[in-house]
Structures are given as structure tokens and as C-alpha cells.
Image (tube, rainbow, N blue to C red):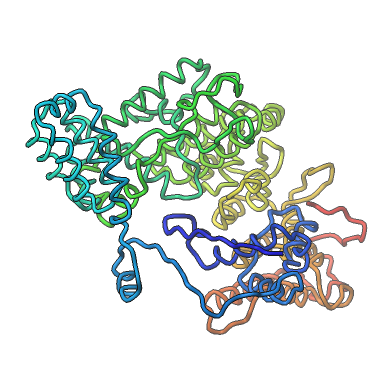
Length: 617
């Protein structure tokens, strides 16, 4: 079997697109895609995890990937057939480090290769303009003079040519003379960064504040590479009030014509406010009928009514604009000052996602899941949005989905009660603190789904199903325990009686099937032990030396110690070992605790476990 392996490295991409880890995983995937029968042999841990755990499958470790390549090299299906003399073709921008490394090698300059294409592009863009036709009648050489000057100054950079053509077309619209058109070309800086500064300086003063807001919005949207492209329709709704956001008002009942009008107005605003640096682009789905995502162009979500404009996204005209904004100090320039102390890009983006979530309908779909995840992420970062406002928004989100709304309607009708569990699962400690203050405590509080909040904080049954769930927050768990949350509070889960502690200890058994964040797992376990958790439930932990006569402390140390490399030179491993010792000390310090589980004192919390106990999932 012959396999051609490809990996596109992109330094503006995700970590997987610009790291050695991503390279190894991509190459391994390309090898295994046509030979899936080799997966159990090359990645045994992941294969076992798929069939042994309901948790999201974790990525392979560096050691696992290296071992997979070694096994692949020895496999009879793949025989290496390579020449010892290899020629490589490397394409790079003229970065100083690349010039030094490859200056002695044969090379080609891009501007020498693209000169003809640029000449053709410039001619096609300007020779059909009505005024250019008139100029050519009196001065036949004018077209070639303009084309030659632009080709020479472009240095092979197509983006510079595109922007220069726009300026020349504006001059033709204004009936500029040949000398004035040449002056327009000469005033354009040859370097892109300087050219962007020049364009920004051309923005009308009355529009600069809006331009700063739009550019900052898209920059914040793009800087976090886990988010989807910025939906034009969602931004168009928020942009109607000059991007000023107060209390969120969900959009209702937009007709198809209204959606089209809003997106057309946004398209025009972006052109005038940012002079083309931002633009609307068709969404990436080339065939909406074959994608898993829904079309949001019309109220009935029918594909037949698909409108590319309404379904478009807002993007930079070119990646180099984003690179320019990432340059240290650029966003501190006066042109990027929104002159509005209340403006918070993350708050605006959360409202954009909320609007799209509302438009996606009450049924849980791929699109609604994406907008739900984005809303949660932006709300966590919205520094100007108060805790009570965020809780109101979270409650509205719960009522958006059929499954969550039905549960909340039957459990509680309190104003803010239905959304508190989302604040807990996403680690919004200030929101929960405000809720506790308004309700004079937290004892006896269950979520809209009928679960203790401590269960939501530790197991996160809703957000853990997201593609990129937020990290487990020890601060949230610690706060709930301080407020009286009980690790041993019984509740019903899938027709079984369990507690937050039982559910947590059951999840620990799955550590072998995923890459654990051991510091967090140990700290959460210690916090619950210190708060009176039934210690004997930890005897469920697997033990490689048997499970009858070994003392519980040995079982705990052996289980967690399996994930520690015990490298004395690793600061992370040192902190992990210290955390494990703290957990062991917490177990030892429990009043009435006996190290031998076969001779437990009655004062010890917990009840004997039976072999037929149902798992607490």
C-alpha cells in the first residue's frame, strides 16, 4: 500500500496546525485512515477508551504517538522505500531568518513569477471603466503607464495590487487626471503594514469610532481560534444600535426579507467604516443541503430558501490584516480607540452568538451547539456584564432548548433559578456569589434539572458534552462547599440513587482511559474529603494488587501514583506529588478513620459497599 502524506503548517492556525505535535498526529492519521484495522494495535489506549468510557476520547500523548510510529515502521503493511538523496522545495515569506538559512540555495522570487498575472489583473480592473476609455482616446499610452507603475511597485504582492486598484478606481470615479492617478499610486506605501495604516488614516472622522469597534470585534473573534467565523446576521442585529448593548432582548420573528435587509445594511457599513478591510464572505459550507448545519436564512430554516448573503460571515479581507492587528502596540493606536468606556467586545460577541442561538430554533442541532458554546465562552470573558445580567441570559438560554426548558418548567419557576447550573458548570463564580447573596444562602438548592449544584460543578453534565468544554474550576467547587454544599447529598440520576461524591469517585475510575489533569483531579478530591465526603467510596478505585486486604491509603496512593512520572526535575510533577500528599493527609486527619477498611469504626462516614451496587455514572 502506497500512502502520500501531507501536512500544511500554518503559523496563524490552531496549535495543531503549527506544532510538532500536530504534525505527528496529522501524519499518523493519514497513515491510519486507509488502514483502520491497525488502530487497535498502534493506539491501544485510545481504542480501549472508546469502548470503555462515556467520556470524550482524549488525544494521544507524545509517548503514545512515538510508539505508534515505531510500531508502524515495523509493520509488514508498510515497507520503507526511499532514496538517500532527497530534494526539497521550500516556500517562505522573506523573513530574515529564512533568508539567512537559504541564501546559498537556488531560489525563485515570487514577483518574477507573478508579474504577468498582476499585469493582467490590473488591466482587467481598470480598462473597462468609462472614464479610462475616454482618457485612452486622448492619451492612448495612459493605460499602459498606469499598469506598468502598479506592477513595478507591487513587488509581486497581490494584496497590495487589490488595494491599489481600489484607490485607482476611486480616482477614475472622481475624474482624476493622469498625474493625479499616479499621485494616488505613489502615496500608497509599498509595505503592507504601512499600507494598512494609510487606509485607516483615510477613514472619515465620523466613522472612526465605529471602525475601531468593528475591527476590535473581529480581532477578538479570531484571536480565540476555537470559535467559528463571526455570523453576519447576528452582528447585523447588534449593529443596528451602533454596537451599543444594554439588557439583551432576544430577536423574534424575523422574516426572510428582514434578514436580507439587515445583512445588506451591515455589508454597506463595513465598506464605508473600514474601507474594505472587513467584508462579508459566503459561509464555508459549499453545499448547504449536504452539510449537517442548518440554514438560518429564513424563519422556517428550509434549505430551499438559502440566501448566501444572510448565511455569510464577517472576515478580514486578507489574513495579513489580522497579522497587522496582532503586531504589538497596534491596537493601542488612536485609530483603534472606540471612545466608549462601556464597549466590551466580548459582551457584544456574546450577544451576537445569543441572537444566532435564538434564530437556530428550540431543537438541539449542530449550529445551536456551536452558538451555545460560543455564548458561554464570551459571557465568561465579558468584564462589563454584571453577574445578575449574565444569570438572566443563562436562564434565557436554558429556556431556548426544548429538553432543558421542559425540565426547568417542572422543577422551578423562580426568576433566576433555571440558569444557575450553567453558571456553575462554566465556572462563573461571581454569578453564583451574587445568586447566593440575593437568596441568602445555597443550602438545599438544586438545579433546573433536579441535580445538586455540586454535581454540576464536578461532573458538568451539560457543558462536558461540548466540543471544547471550559476547564473544571476548583474555585467554584471550593466556594460551593464553603456555602454548605453536601458531597453526600442523595439525588436520582438515570433511575439510580447517587451522590455528588459517588459520581465523582466513579469518574476517577475512568482516568486510565483519558489524559487526566491530575492536579485538578487531586484538588477536587481533597476538597470533597475535607468537606465530609464518604471516604470509603474511594475503595471503588482500581488496585493492581487486589482489592481485599490492601489498606485504603495504599489504594489511593497507588491509583493516583500511576499517572505521576516522578521526575524530580519537573516542577509540574513536584506540585502533583505535593497535591497527592495533601490528599493523603486529609484522609488521615478524618476523625475516627481507620486505615484498614476491613476494621472500620462506626464513626467513619459512609456505608459498606456491596458488589452489586449500581454505578453512580
